[in-house]
Amino acid sequence: MPRDKFPWELHNFFKKGSRVVVLTGAGVSAESGMPTFRGEDGLWRNYRAEELATPEAFTRDPKLVWEWYDMRRKIIHGCKPNPGHETIVKMEVYFEDFQLITQNVDGLHRRAGSKNVIELHGNLWRVRCVEEGKIFDFMEVPLKAVPPLCDCGSLIRPDVVWFGEAMPIEPLEAAFTAAEGCDVMVVVGTSGIVQPAALIPILAKQNGAYLVEVNLEPTPFTGLADCSVLGKAGEVLPELWNLIKDQ
Ligand code: APR
Image 1: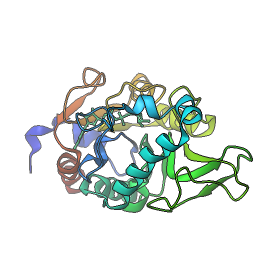
Image 2: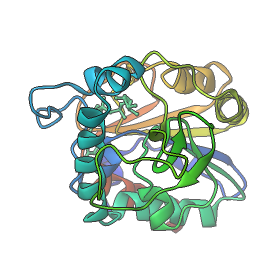
Image 3: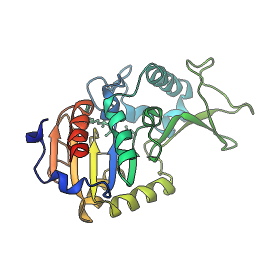
């Protein structure tokens, strides 16, 4: 077991009764085959996510935006949760007080079996009618028509938070409350540059939590973390789990 990767004091914080929060980003799904947003493979037809995931882009060209989502939905449909997602499910079962917060819209945490999930940025398997505002699951993949329409004939859009849009207040408040009250936070596979999600580890740390980070590379959280492990989520999280469950 690679104990040298993790500081000796780690076991003091991961007690069964500890309040544990895990915050994930696109990196946790990378090993499932889902490209991250800002990685080298994060470009699509020379567009960046920031140019497509906006209300302005949708108003200008709903077909283009839906083609991008159709591509992403097809990739996710063919993906399976990886050992990173699976380890987070084991943590939820083990700890008496556990909360998962994700920025991911791919739904892979729920597919892996996570139940207590705050999806900060929504879920791309849900859509919203732009006229009536009604929200419903929409699993069609690949899309039969692009852009897809609601029964009322209006456009539907993915029920996700786009750049320039306010995040729904309820999940955000729940995430902040969990961060303020936790003993340990594990931050996995996020570049930590998108607000307000990037505040979550800072809030946890300010309120005395022990902060663990798992990422392929250093991020703005690395200097703040009590334990920073450079590596793949699908490898490091199972190693961390082995330390936790063996104590
Ligand atoms: N294991 C761990 N970390 C990884 C792995 C991996 N296998 N692969 C990539 N990473 C890390 C990268 O080093 C990077 O820090 O995951 C991070 C992915 O960063 P982003 O692509 O910026 O994704 P994320 O932080 O989730 O983006 C936040 O931005 O575009 C919006 O709404 C979108 O929710 C998203 C938000």
